Length: 344
Image 1 (tube, one colour):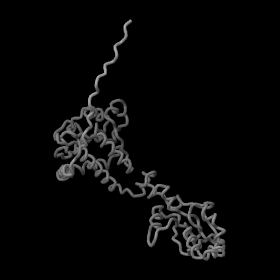
Image 2: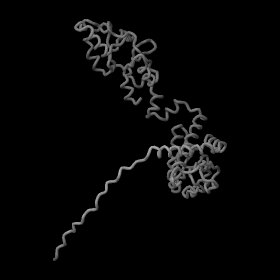
Image 3: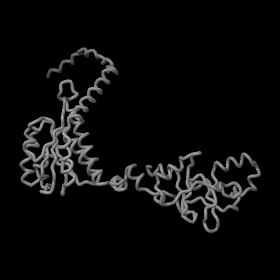
């Protein structure tokens, strides 16, 4: 049985290191200016009465406002729907493909379905139209080409004026999607204002984000209290309170009387300054002799973001605020570290 011949030792093709490519600043600037001009064309030619009719239709919808689209228009439609949801408006994205395989069951005669398509000839949306009409849904096309099939098939059409795409071939949808997004988000804010949405209502829809936390969380939600407080009496010797000063993670002592009224604060900075000034004399000093009798304070019902602003205010920033009630009774402490840890 013969053996296989040894593999040929073919030379490998020479590796060519790609040249480092550059884009000139002028080229980039000209592209931004061109896009700006295309967007200005949209703003200058948008039919405001048509847009107002569209906006009021959404505002007066008794059901859910559904959005649909394919490809990049679909991404825009999904984003606008999520914006409305964040404003407390019933909205959802409906995939045109999934709709024809059962998801159309979510539609009812009280709903509005907004279809985003630059050309108005997207086959998936055209197939969806008669099925949605059979459910009694009010259909709105949002397109950029005049006299298109989708606009003619819907109950309403909104024309988004498009001069051309920024793409040099006028093909890649980079300007058309930009105006779709601007249009949808602006309408969303118009709905927000028409519904008189408050900051508190908006924050309630964003409880985990910084927006929500800054508008929802109060000092009492983030403060330390009870056994977490580094408290002492004004007659206590400074050196006897070092453990209390350093173990609670607040960087201070809260000086109180027998009824828990706040008398002052003594910080680790005060300790260093006292030690430098008094030397061994610090062993004979009480906390009450060296504490700050007029510290910044805050109430438990103040917003947490207000506490942070108060800490950072002139003449010099502080790292904590004692929390007192209307009778000057100490009930907690809020620290800068605690606020940052809470995501504020």
